[in-house]
Every structure is written in structure tokens, then in C-alpha cells.
Amino acid sequence: MKVHNLAFIDTETTGTDPDKHEIIELAVIIAKQIEREGKGPKLEIVAEKEWKIKMTRPDLAEEEALRVNGYNEVDWMFAVDLRAAMEEFAKVTQSATFVSHNLTFDYAFVQRAFEYTGVESQMHYGKLDTISIAFARLYDVPQAQSFSLRALCELFKVDNKRAHTALADTRALVEVYKKLMNAS
Image (cartoon, rainbow, N blue to C red; front, top):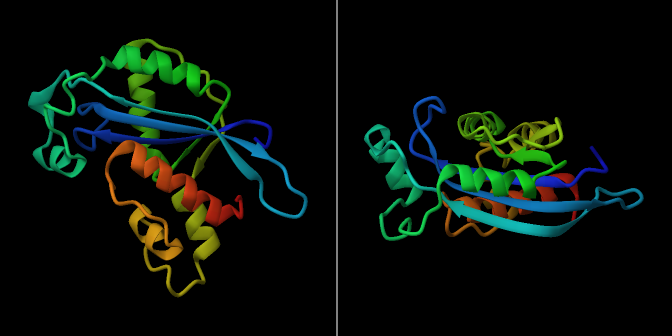
């Protein structure tokens, strides 16, 4: 996994069930890992991309999820269809390791989107969950009472003013990962 790029990924969805709800916003930041002796890797950002995705089943969307994600028709006016987003996403993430905060959530939605569209994922099989990393690294840190992205941003003084938008959360995720892994 050291030789693979890292694909920091966040999804915003219409609910919590990947079999019923859908991705309405997807973001990825690709980072190259540059080895440093005696330290964590240096991360070099090589790509950043986000997609607003057209809802196909608005009748199944949860109002609370749409509110939290800031969904509105104006911002999604030029949204792309899921297949187009996943085709581009597959190219950008080729051979990269999936990194997410709450991996089980984001990975389930991304995997379901690949299955639904018939687009083949070309990502590396390895996956990293920053909640698990934070729990392991910060277990004995008294200030770490929660491992949510918001709590970790506060702990590490990472700015995330536009929380619950895919690209802002992905940018915050990269910064939190750097702090956790000493990967400046």
C-alpha cells in the first residue's frame, strides 16, 4: 500500500441505506505518498474532483439527510448522472487505496454505485478508515472523547466551515489524516 496513491473519499447521500438511498455528492482527493526516513509519508496532492449527482429516486430521500447535506435544486441544476460520475471517478481512483472517515458508510455507497452503473472499480483492494486510525492513535488522549470528523477537526484545529459538503469534508479528512499519521 505504500506505493499506491491514496484516494480520500467522501459521499453525501439521500439517507443511510445504500440499497435504498443514493449518492448526491461525491468527492475525491488523490494524494501521492512520498517516503521520508523516520517519519510518516509526505502527501502530495495530485488531483481533486467533486461531482454533484442527479437524484433518480427523490421519493425515497430522507428530508433530514437532504437538510444536513444542504441539498437544493439550484445547486444541483447542472448535476451529472451517476454513471458519468462513476466512470470519471473510476479513472481518477485507479490503483489508489480508498481512505474515508467511517469507511463502512462511504464504501458501501460507492460499491453500490459501481454495481448499479456497471462501471468497474479499478481501486487497490486496501482500504483505510480514519475513525479506526484515530481510535488506535488517540485512545489514551483525554481530549479525544469522540472520533467524529467534527471532533477530530476541533482537536487538531482543522478548519471545516462547510461540513457535510463532500469536497469540504474530504479536504478536512486529508488534514486530519496528516495529523494522525505525521504525514505533512
